[in-house]
Amino acid sequence: MPEQLFPWMQLIGRILFSMMFIGSGMMRLFKLNDMAAYAQTRGAPAPKAATVVTGLIMLVGGVLVLLGWHRFIGAGLIAIVVLLTAFTLHGFWKETDPVVKQNEMSHFLKDLALCGAALLVAVYAGIEWPMSLGG
Image 1 (spheres, rainbow, N blue to C red):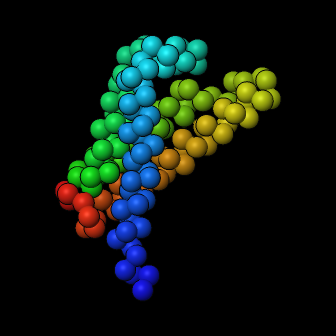
Image 2: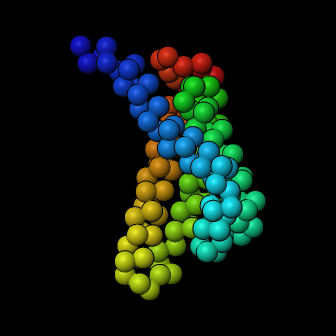
């Protein structure tokens, strides 16, 4: 019985995982000035360009994983961008205010967890995915 649920669990997991990156990518592009201003306050280099590039990478990576098409590339793009985001925007070790430090540490750890999940998606990209475009 549980084996019959696996294809649906894989599809639902893929949808939920991808929604994070598709939504974040769209937000970066639709609210470019606000997101670039935030990136600038966190010390990101070339904040407007970085916001556009990371938004596009998240959007493309999320769609590829969602569709199950070129999923190794999609998951790889996601892993790279969240790892870079963790170290560039969420440097909790630089903070002195304990509340800000804790918040940034939470974001840092979330990004590391998402990077790990993306790497797992990439590892399993070589096997057949149910209800996907394949590739």
